[in-house]
Image 1 (cartoon, helix red, strand yellow):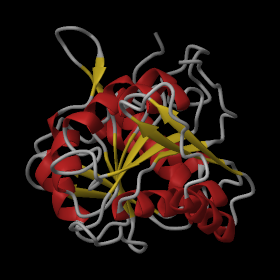
Image 2: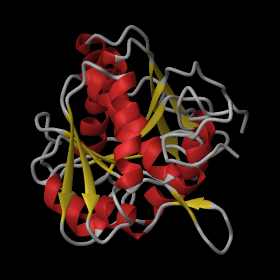
Image 3: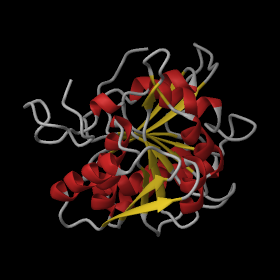
Image 4: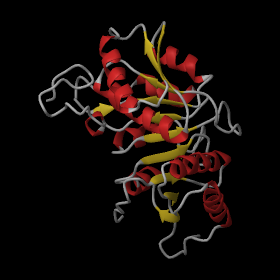
Length: 286
């Protein structure tokens, strides 16, 4: 499969004929329009015969593109590709701003990209990944509420904060940073938030400490959130950047979209980083 490097502001969406994919496309169109960037709708067709024509002009795909244009997206592209869902979307998301998928689609028992397929995308994608979901199948994702982000003072927390602030600023909303009491001390979190306020002076940012684990704390806040943002941490054994138990649990159960930030080393750094000054997580740059 030939890799297509898209403009960095592109929002890529994996779509099929399901209602969940339609919700994901509409959600992604809002993000693309708010960021004044292009939208790329991709439909992967596993096992498609080599000698059979692909349905490039499917009516449902044109309807998704038309709806995105009405939302205000300046450029909407559609593509039908033979091949596996994960490999195709990872390929098409190369260089993208965000990869968006639905949660209750037609290609798996519990949803097109719920569970293992979503985790496979998140663990391997170089860009942030959004799993769009409502409180139940056939229920659209919420369009109101704060932008909630899980914080713990780590590099992953910094990447999640930057992404959450970007989304809250472009889409319009307030940011609630949730620190679970079972996590380490909130000192580094407060440093990260102080730097974030300097970069986004017009954004309303609140730090909320919630008793319990990160999963329970964010799960509780999710019932009133427009979306959740979490980071990817480094596994202690391998050093790989992976989605942890909190992210997996939220993807399976949160009643709102869950956005997983890119690898921490790709997140925005503080202006002092690289100049010998401490970064927003309180550590000197490596």
